Image 1 (cartoon, rainbow, N blue to C red):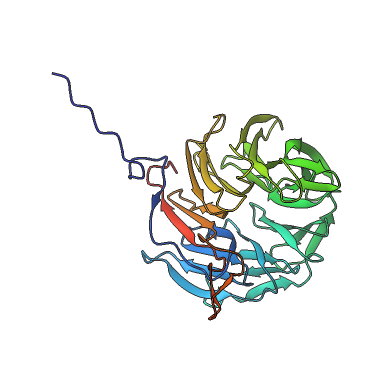
Image 2: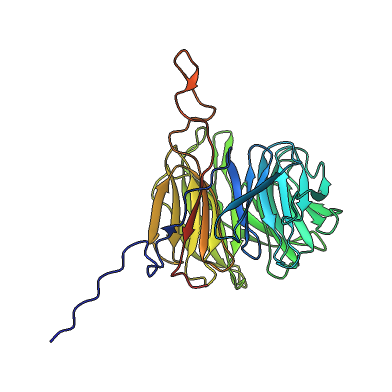
Length: 369
């Protein structure tokens, strides 16, 4: 007698590793979120916000308890980053007015340990902390990559890559830093000598439309082994009101050779806004933001033509994975929003709500940590 077939696992169930399962009602910060990041021990979630604050949630009690917001910034908090030392965590943040701040994220008031008022002349675009925790890197609209001491914020040096620097990441050995620029290349820069060691090319991420230059390398991310690095942005289809198709190029770090390229389905999907590898390296996750309502969260295996999981969400700003690989946080725009709202009727009530960023939490019980 033939044994009965086992029922196929339901999508989103604990035995299906490919589909995240909603964990709780989304967290609701009052403004838009630029970046979400888990602390190195996974017990704290932080979010950089448009209202010049860094929001924090304590995850240790089985519920998401919001802590007092971190203040001190002058404009939009454009990026945040933790170091990797769980015994002495540090949280770094940058803003659209040029400031860089370091904090102890677990102290009750999280007051700045140190700050650099003018780390850049205006908008600070990207932020990274070296794996050894000694150095902080920032890039700005002033076209500089700058390095800072993580201990006290002292300036170590600066480098001008010759094109707008949009993203930054440290190499696994902390001895070099990668800076992604508008023209679709990534320069590996020696931290000590501040000279270019080599350049990785993903030039399809850049286009010149008449007098307008669009695109650029928006995200750089190493896998947990340090053997692969992802370079992400979009293939621009037009200038002006930019339409572009998400694109991710995977490189072998030792050789610098590209091993695979992953392109989205439509120019409406927009740029890759954030990227994370699963700790096992089995697949990667990315968020995109494009034409209204066409953002996506995707799971993709390196080398595959299409993602094996994709869900459309109002434009996704960021994502992060807990260090143990069990929980995923995704920030996205609230549905039916319209920027600053639009008055309706004599009472002036909004026709559509103003933008904010619900932070969706998902469980990934089948993922291999």
